[in-house]
Length: 215
Image 1 (tube, rainbow, N blue to C red):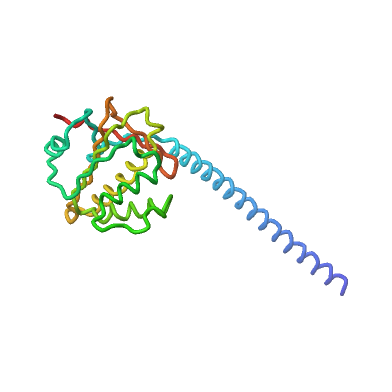
Image 2 (cartoon, rainbow, N blue to C red; image 1 turned 30 degrees about the vertical axis):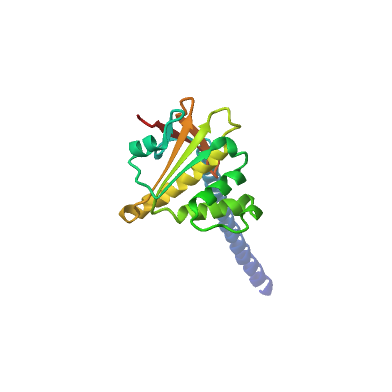
């Protein structure tokens, strides 16, 4: 009798174990399906990210112009209707490095003298220049770059400055009617400089269309 009871218990236990195994197999199947779906989704996301990185977007900016060689500053101001707080001319040929560019910009837009400016370089110098530009976001700012041409080595400094102006204009637009500032960049060039290519942090490319400043 005891043997029969033990056999019966073993049979029930076996049935329970088989049932549990079936449940685990079903769960395993569900997990495998979910893994496949996630792998497919991940593959799609990677493809979308790749497409974004390789994307080239063309943008017409309202702050970026080029003009003919030796166009006078007064003529530029009249055409753009600049009454201006800050109007500065720079010789692009003197911008041998980005550090030189940022130092010149800081010296020209700051009312007070900046101490120890020559001791700063690289990221610190750029950060200070961007900060000083942001402080003038409610003013009219006109930069005229003289002697720019496509033979300048990769035009790194111009591209870097345009990237900052793009960021600043985005902040101006976010400010809406409360932000009355204008920041304008005019490039003096012997040739038609109608486009400039920037690369964003995500490696996507932006082509800025440069408008010809009319006479």
